[in-house]
Length: 226
Image 1 (cartoon, one colour):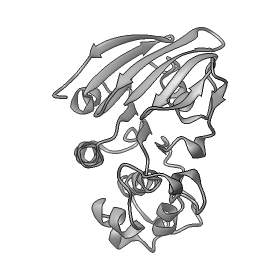
Image 2 (cartoon, one colour):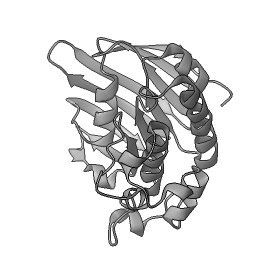
Image 3 (cartoon, helix red, strand yellow):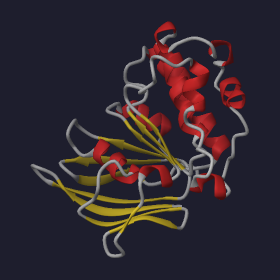
Image 4 (tube, one colour):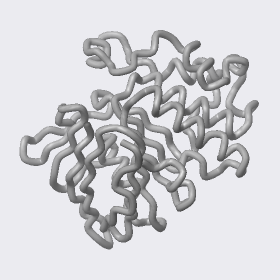
C-alpha cells in the first residue's frame, strides 16, 4: 500500500499531493510545470516535501512530524527517468546489474516482494537477452527503454516510478511498450506511478488517473478493475 500526503512549496505555487494506491498503475497527467515530476522526486527522495508523510508498504520513508527522511537507496523504489539515464560506457547487461542491491544493504536484509535472482531473468522477460553485450548507443529507443525498466526492476522495488517513459518513442513502439508495462505490473503486483502528457496513454494504462494543474490535483479515474 502506498500512501502519499504532502505539500511542497514551489516558486510559483504550492504543490499538494494526496495519493493512496494499493496496487495497479496510477497515472499523473497535466501540463508541463504542473508538479508531476516533483511528486515522483519527492516520493523517491530526490526532493524533500515541505510537510507531510510518505508510506510504502507500512514503512514510513518520509514524515515531517517524525523527522524521518530515508535516502533513496533505502526506499526500495525503482525509477525510470525520461531520458533512461543509462551508462554509455556499460553494456546492456552491466547497466541492468548496476541496479542490483549492494551486499550488506538494507534491501538484502529484508524480503523483497518480487526478488529477482539474476539479470538474465529480466533480460529474457523484457526480450532483450540478445542485446546483453551491446552498448546503449548501439540499440534503439524502445530497446533502451526496456533496459531502463530491467535496471529499475533489478532493484527489487516495492514501488516503480516512471517519468514519461514512452514520450520519445514512435507510435508503434509506444503501443508495444504500453502492453509490456501492463504485463509487468500484473506480474510484479506492486504500485506503479507513471507521468505522461498523453491523455490517451493515461486512459490505456491508468487504474487511477490524477490530473495536476499548478499543484492542485483532480481525480479523473478512481479505480479500474481493482
